[in-house]
Each structure stands twice: as structure tokens, then as C-alpha cells.
Length: 445
Length: 123
Image 1 (cartoon, rainbow over the protein chains, first blue to last red):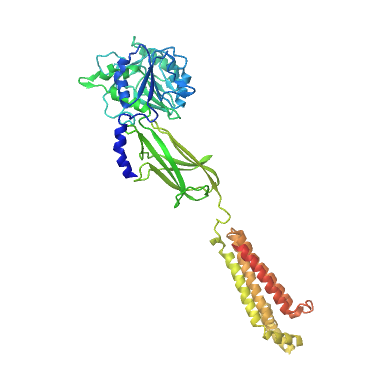
Image 2 (cartoon, rainbow over the protein chains, first blue to last red):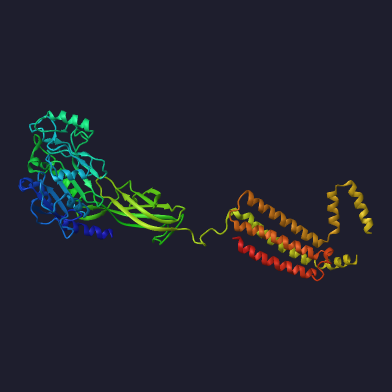
């Protein structure tokens, strides 16, 4: 198997090099506002096409091509670059965009400081936007761009964004994050930044006042998110970007300092790779369960059996378009559940066997219908969940221990009675010859 | 002869305790067979008492084992006691048509059946 794999690997790699793409499909619909020119985003779209994506462009007001036809999503990914469009065609509503997520279509959505249907949809993803017309502003560091064009340090040691990127140019609207656990912040605002009316900077005071009065989150500081990922329970991903300019050729080529290009190009590539389910995509291939020292699963298990549970997990490799065994999860847990988890134990990777996670445990002293549950939800990673139902039965009548040490006085009693009986019989029969004489003697008396 | 026998025991009784004289009278006036039965009965009684105390004080957990062990003592005791009643020459008038051989055969058969049930119930 391993030999075959090493043989096949270069072959597969060669053929798929040009086709390397997402784990869910390569068709992309781009809803591009007419006021935005395709040419202004040539690097971003060019990088996508180079990876093998097939881009289809459509204006938000056109009616074809359809996003959903006969209740089937027509594209694997939808990019909504329409930050200022107020009226969309009939088939693009917040409801259809949300239903796309349940149809496992990934979304990349750009916002702007203007009030549009998309900014009200953002609230459904627990993103709290500042009032309309208040973009992100930072006066630091000192630079020759307007205060609304902010260089942002990308996150370090992040599992989605490449390490060592130069700062990223950003201009647009920040988002305060609600308490949804499905949100994954991808780019956070610099600590000195805040959201305010760009024309009159004095509006900052009014904003602070409003925040204190209403008790709403203050749109300032590094708790703000500028690019936010959201992973639905269907594993579909939606990424909200505060401003469309981050993708533009202008910002990609703009120097962050003399001679140093901005990190925009790699950053938006990473964001698109995560959103289109290339990166951080896991799946459970198979699960197995059997008694310890056996290899095949049983129809039922008996209480107190020692049982082994094994899960095989793979990660998608976009370079090779292959699922590779993945042993990098160290906090996987297995639950053995009947209404409540009777057993919750870690499911550690097996050393030397890639992708295999295994644990042995004793089935509880309780019969009923149990489930092996694996439920792994981590920010930025595909959710893993697997449920296997097994009935746990009490021992059959002949599976109980037959002789118990606690009962040895009773066994000894029964056996000694029998032994004494035999001895008594032997004595009685041995004494038989003398007896008649005695009997006669006593009769004579 | 019997009077001579009784007289020394009486004189001895006056100097010894009544329990000892009772034991002496029993020892001298009981046939070997009856003594064998009595020894058997005492053994069964002690065994039953031990098992009952173990059940009460420690555990009755395999209750079937306790029932089997205890019932074997009690059953064997009953059978042995009835054998004693039937072969005792003093009771001859009550069991005129039961010979000692017949009584022993009944006892042996009853015991075998009892033990059969006991071992079935024990494990």
C-alpha cells in the first residue's frame, strides 16, 4: 500500500498541479458591482484562476446565471463584491445567501461603510457594525495616506494566515464581534484604530459618548475585527471583509514602507483559501469499534466489556487534491453517551500510524442504547462529528461467574454434609454385624 | 446387675455435677449405632449454625448457595433424626412394621435425593 502510494504520488502530483483547488468544487460566482472594474482586482482573480477556479462574473442586478436552480446550488463558492449595491436581483436576498450556506456553498462578502442589505445580514452572523458612514480610522503610524487607509499588522502564528507577512493595507468598516462561537477573526484592527465619521474627526468624541450611553460595544481598539470568518454547522464558510479595497491591485502593489510591498496579496490568498475550504479542512474517514483482543465489531457489547474505538481522520491537501491522513489533533475526545456522556475520554493519535486515533475503555456497568460520539469543533477547522449507536446488554444467564469466593462456607457446608453422610453410611454398614447381637441382647433384657 | 450398675453412678452423681452424670448415663446406656447417629446430628447442627451465622454476619450474597448449604444440613438433620427415631429400640412399639433395615434404606434414599437437589442448587 505504502509502496503503491509512493509510486502514485508523483503521478498524481503532476496531473493535479494545475487543478489543485478547493475540497468542495472549483466553480466560483463573482457578483461584481458595475462601478468596480474587474481589472482593478486582476491579481486576486488571476491568483484564483491560476489555482484552477472557474470564475463566472455577474452583476448584482442581472438575473442570470442563477445562483440556485431547482433548489440546487449552482456554484461551489460565491463572492459578493457589491459593497454599495442597495437593490439586488430577486434571487439574491439575505435568505438565499443563508440558504446557500446550508447547501454547503462558501461565501466571501465585502462590506462598506454604507448601509446595504448586506450590512443588515452581517448582524445575523453576530457581527455588530458601527453606524453607517463610520469607517475605520487610525492616525498612527504617521504616513502620507488618508487616515482611513490603515496599515494593519496581520496575526502572528495563526493557523489560517501565513506567518511573517508584511502589514496589510485596509480601508473599510470594522466589526465588533458578538458571542457566536462560530466566528473566526482573521484580521484585527490596530490598537490605536477606531471607527468614526471620516469627514469630521471630532465625531470620535460623539462616538465615545454614544457608546457610553447605549452600552453598546465601543468600535475602537484591537478587539475590533476587520476580516471575520464564520463557519456554519454544515462546514460551509462565510468570510466578511470590512472593505473591498483590501483585494485591489492598488493595495496589493502599494508599498508599506520604502521598497517593501504590502502583505495584501498573500493575505487575501490565505483568506480565499480558508473560505473556499482549501485549508484547515478535516474529515473523519471511518470509525471502528471492537472488543479488546478482537478485530470485528460486535452487534452488541456486554456491560463492563473492554472496548476499543478507532477513528481515522484526514486533512485535505489542496496542492495534491488529495485527502492525507492527519495526526495533528491532540485534544480530540470520545464520549460514550446514553442521554449523558457516561464516559468522556481523550482520543489520542496512535504513534506511527498516521491519521489513526484510538482509545480503549471499559463499558459502564449500565445497559441501554449507547452512542460513540466524536464531536470536535475548533475555530477555523472543519467540524468533525461522528455518532455510532451500539446497544449495551447485561450478561447472558451463562456469562455470570459460576462459583464465588464469598460462598465458600456454603460450598464447604454442602460438601462436608455429603462426606459426613458417606462416612456415616460406611460406619453404619460396618457396624452391622455386631448390631444384631446387641439388638438381641437388648431384646432379651 | 442393673441395680448394682445404678448404685455407683448415683453415689458418683452426688459428688459429681448433674451434667457429668447425664453424660455418663448417656454414654453407658446408648448403643454404638445411636451414638454414631447422635455424633452425625451434632456435626450437622454445628455446620448449620456456622453457615447461618456467616449468612447473617458476613454475606448472604449467592443466596442460592446459602439456601443449598443450609438446607443440606437441615434436611440431613431431619432425615438422620427420623432414622434415629425408627431404629431406637425404645420406640419399637411405635414402629412395629418398620424394620431397622427398611428405615436405613429410606434414610439412604432420601439423603441421596436431598444431595442431588442440593448440588443442583449450589452453583
